[in-house]
Length: 199
Image 1: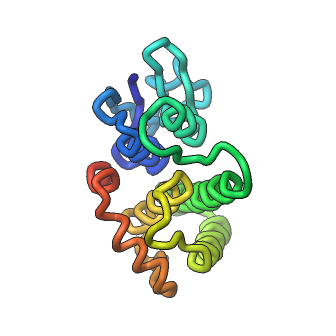
Image 2: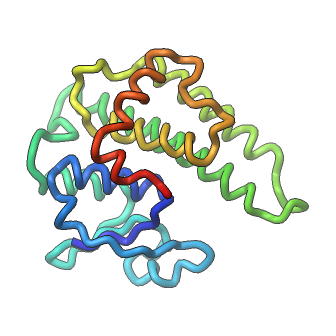
């Protein structure tokens, strides 16, 4: 399998963490393909020009990190990262959606900051930062217990917190939520997260 990725993309990091957790890390061929400033290398595989993109051994092309993660979960070993049914399934997917929303807001702030100063919006980053703070507060009341499985929801939360640490430390992810801060300081040392830290 080949993964088109960038070392700083949190969405690609989530896929890489899942691959490692599912015992597929060694099978994943990594191909650096940053979509910025020109997505030409990605467009043949994803018309949206976004990463990550996974090309399976059988030629199946998948994009969007939740889809790729479900594929890896279905094809790797070990416990399922997304339960097959019931309330637990929806809770895992809800946590992933909240974490991915945090990432969307964080990436929007980062990209806005790269625009020429005279063209930057002040309102959009402010609204995105407020969304991130609300999401962190919500996660702070719903922290996975220490013995809980490291499922896709937990992976997505960990990757989102890692991206905030990397790009937007001023938002103080988890600082006001001791349970979340303690969970993050423990989980970030997992081999899958340590191996995929951005440079």
